[in-house]
Every structure is written in structure tokens, then in C-alpha cells.
Image 1 (cartoon, rainbow, N blue to C red):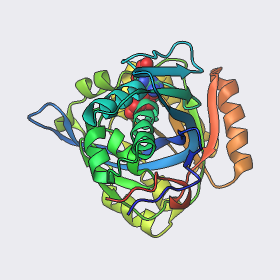
Image 2: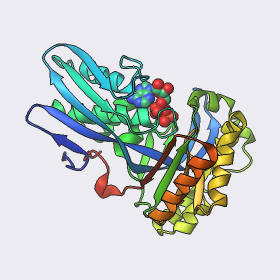
Image 3: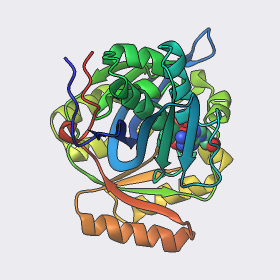
Length: 310
Ligand code: ATP
């Protein structure tokens, strides 16, 4: 079955497909062991957010990929994951002509929010629609995995459990609604450097993933907040101690829960009330003099996904 969810994907008569590429946070991130292929065997509970980048993909008669973005420092060639996704689709399916991609970034870059991976997933889904390829979610995920470990999850979205490198996915019941404050200090973190520094066999405290799944299924907000845990925190905290200070600040100011997302450096904090979230955003901005503080919300299945099935 193949349907298009209007909320996430729009098609107009000029053969342009417009998609939302949503940010994600990790409610848990566990690394079980380092595999023989060098990747860590992961177990992560992922959650999509309302915050999104906008992507419009248009067919062009001329061959090649033209990418435009609102951020002057982002590469627009093959170093950009959106460009790489388009190239993969054009080549794999020998598509005639080319594409023009217009990318409007709102998700902070190099932040642990899967901005680039989400953009790659969005371009795959958009081109599937634009060229009427009718690829299943499973087929798109296999292509996406060639571009990055988080890309398969970004195609699925919503609340999900990710295992393996991140590509073994299971949809979970929707996480109960939270307002989410994202605070990204003014430096990026290399995901590769954090994983290289991680010594999986020395991790003292692993997340209670089973408990998190139970808390989500029971819509138990306090249970979810009590089980937020990310084994990459100590590694990133050692590289950049300010990240730990931001987390402590959120908790000391009354956040229901706070955690570093992915390999960081973004710290997110959860709130039930919008006013409390807005207040915390202002406080963290003032206390740490950081520019990138965003208030957003969790999304549920009604607002998320590209309408693809396995
Ligand atoms: P992930 O690595 O899971 O995608 P992240 O939030 O840690 O998520 P990104 O925002 O994807 O990191 O950025 C990581 C690097 O990827 C940046 O240094 C950036 O230059 C590069 N990059 C390539 N394509 C993109 C894109 N479309 N959007 C953002 N960054 C991109």
C-alpha cells in the first residue's frame, strides 16, 4: 500500500514534491558492544519532533543535482547528505534528467538531532514520490542505510526502538506529549570521535530500555523522565564539560527530565506545560549565552511519517 500523508508531503502540478524533514531526539541510547565490523551494537528509543527542515525537490530536464540552502556554511555538493541521497536515487534507478533541491534548515547542524540524516531520508521519500517508483519502506531503508545509520529511522519517524547500527526498527506506541526545549551550545561534536572514544565494555550504567518501553506503553510521563539515559554522555561531557552543565541547569530549574541527544552537544529538556518550556528556554539562553535554543514538541503518528509501509 502506498499513500501520501498531506501533512508531511505535498505534490504540486509543476512536479515538485515538498517534504518535512523532522528532528529526532534519543530518549535512551545504549551501546551493548563493539562489533567485529567496527560499529557498536546499539539499542535506542527514538522520538520525532515538530521541528523540521523544509525540502522541495523538483525534476529538471538537465542532468545533475542543484542544491540550494539558506545556510551559507553548509556544503551544497556531495558532502551534503541531501545531495548524496538524490545521487543515489538517480543512479540506482537510472532516472533521466536531474533534480533541483531547495533545503530550508531550521534544525541545528552537527547537533545530535539527525539533521543531515533526516534530510537524506526526506529526499529519498520525495524522489520515490516524484518518479512514482513505488518503493516500499523496507527498500528505501536499505538505500538509506548506505547514506547513514540514522537514515532508516528518519524514514520511519515517530516513536521507535532502533537496534543494530540503528537500522533494525520497531514502531512503538506514541510517546505521551511533551514540550521539548533544545539547547545547542555554540560548538559541534563529531559523532565519529565520540563513538571512537567510547569503551563499551567499561560502561557502568546501561539504560533501562525495557522499563522505558513499559513507561511509553503506559503513557507514564514520570516513568519516561526517570529513564532518560544516554551512554555517550560521559564521553561528550569529558570533551565539552559545558554540555553537562546545561543538563544540570535544566534539572535544577525544574525540568521533568533532561538528556543529551545522540552524541550531542544538544541537550533537551521535557515539560508538560508550554509556559514552563518557554521560561526554561529563556533562562538557559541567558545563563549560558547560547544562541541556539528552540522550543518544540513531540509528534505522534498522525503528524509524522512519509506514508510508507514495509
Ligand atoms: P546525524 O549525524 O545523525 O545526521 P547530527 O545532528 O549529529 O545528526 P548533522 O546536523 O547531520 O549532525 O551534521 C553533521 C555534519 O554533516 C555537519 O558537519 C554538516 O556539515 C554535514 N551535513 C551534510 N549534509 C547536511 C545536511 N543536509 N544538513 C546538516 N548537516 C549536513
